[in-house]
Image 1 (tube, rainbow, N blue to C red):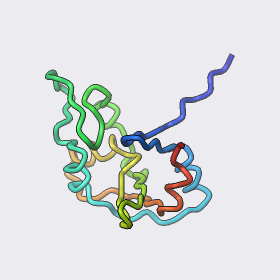
Image 2: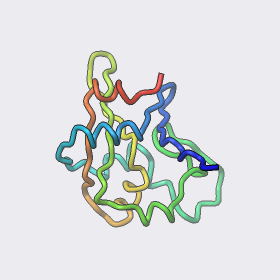
Image 3: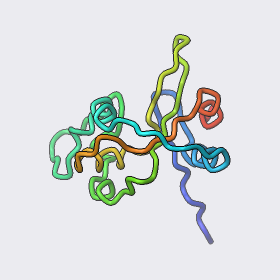
Length: 133
């Protein structure tokens, strides 16, 4: 019996984003990747606090992964040519961006001192289509 592969999901508060659907959307509606600043996302997601040898209390920042779910070995093997995915939400009538795929790549880029990574940014309408209800 074959097991179906797990669906890639990203949770932010009450919102759940289907990463598989985001990747499918991007394949069906290709666009050029734009550079996104690594330092900004590192700061927002507290990636500088993640470390392969961390042995203290588990913590979970408002943004980003908790230490217990992060795999530094995987991160250091991730492909930095694969664009990260940024969702765009509308909050209080303003667009707000949220990285939904690529935390491991950002960590590797941080450790290598890269200034930017390629990114695909979804529109508000596209983001709405990949949110799970």
